[in-house]
Image 1 (cartoon, helix red, strand yellow):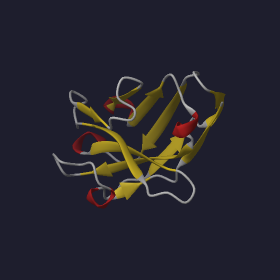
Image 2 (cartoon, one colour):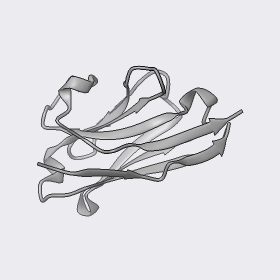
Image 3 (tube, one colour):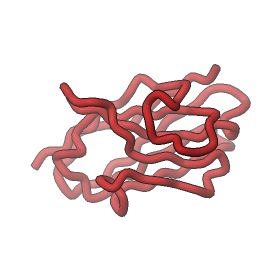
Amino acid sequence: QVQLVESGGGWVQAGDSLKLSCAASGRTFSSYTMGWFRQAPGKEREFVGRISRSGGRTYYADSVKGRFTISRDNAKNTVYLQMNSLKPEDTAVYYCAATTRLGGTVYVYEYEYWGQGTQVTVSS
């Protein structure tokens, strides 16, 4: 298995930027597609974006496309979520997740491993 630990959450104002990190354990980090999800209180966990094993391909939810960027550094076993132009509706707990699936990975059930989450709060 792989263990995931998110960090970098915090409290910011609308329009600000924040960068989240997700550190993974294990020797086979590069074998996983990595995803970012978020969940607001009382809401379903929703897909934010994903990045391929090599980092060459990314895909984002329409709600964050153009504002968020996912990257990964396989040498550091770390995936990142750069969030720009933050909006109050971005407020949520953000989770990173890992899967051995190669495509169509936009649903919660498709991911095998999850981090504990990090809180992001955006004030108006």
